[in-house]
Length: 202
Image 1 (cartoon, rainbow, N blue to C red):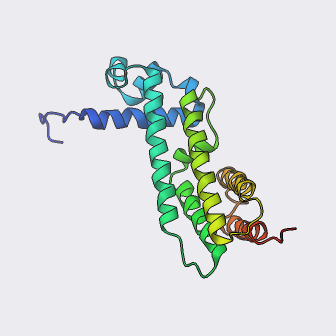
Image 2 (cartoon, helix red, strand yellow):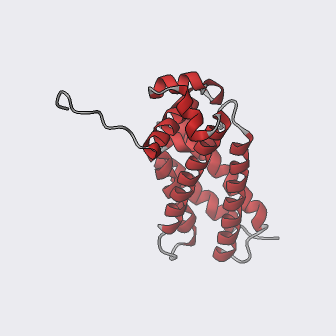
Image 3 (spheres, rainbow, N blue to C red):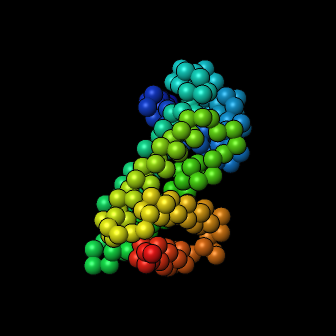
């Protein structure tokens, strides 16, 4: 920038995103309790009053962060569902969806850590969004199971097992990426899906 050129001011929308990014980084590293107005302002290089001007208060900032990351995770999941492969192999549909979520977790780990490992001091809104997303996922899995095999045994509980297992595997991918490789997780999901969906009923 040439000497004497006035510094361009950040728009309110851009500043809002910056504060959300800074808050998310603090929460991701140290939990919600660590995201104090003083620390957020210092890390963002702003005056604390701007936080209140844009978000009302710290709880309002946290809710805005949770809503933004919820929307991002939902969009990434929708993309994974939209990229399902051929129906020639029924179980491949669920594996493809899991693959898509794995990619999202790998590309945006900070978003998914917020929901896979709720940070210390997480507000009630985070748990509410998480419960809502879990219900949506369970409904999706139940519908997919019945479409793949209308005679699947206890589709509701089978969906719950797949959901809980998928969550655990995604957590392992974040915690132990060298052990929990994409291929290892993918193979496990394929075998589990086949065993659960097509097991004999008695």
